[in-house]
Image (tube, rainbow over all chains, first blue to last red; front, side):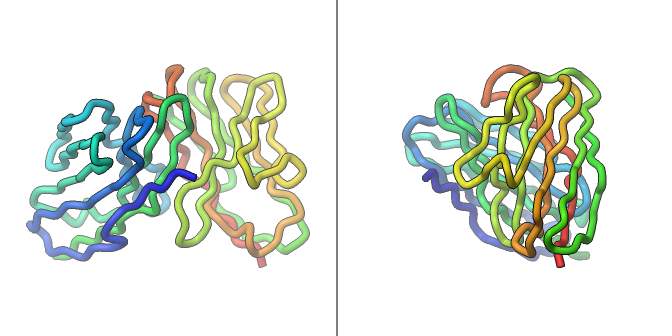
Length: 111
Length: 116
């Protein structure tokens, strides 16, 4: 059974704060690591697909890093806004295997 | 990319009944899947919906409980049979546009099911 863990489970920040979450995953047989943002009553939205150790990706105020040797990825949000409030999911896929999701980090950004 | 719609968006059902969820994609896709998320749990793959053949189920999920149809490359249904309160979950359809697990996976908005 593959273990994908995310921390913290939930987070409450003020508008303008920067924040980050962690996703840890098995370091063997790595193929790809996915990040999603899931707002209530909407479809999970793909943020990043990361495949290379040391990879760093950015989309607006959101960025992510990847360390496949030690099995972790960080997601950063710079200057959080209320519209960033959502659950952030990571998913690991090993070689030729399905996506295994973490339980997510629930972010709430208040004014 | 892919745009996915699901029907119904939510439902409240009585135990012992069955519910069929529909998934429609705006383009032809090879890889199509059904997931569920039980309260407090992670998204879990139920099965891969195969066009023209029986679905491939993950460990812990069986065809009698979750029959799946996939008549073509843009449509699939998942039935939750003989429901119990433990089936209360969000059920999501998803697709990969491409051929591999390293490709982006797109999701529908989900069907929120409450079983009383």
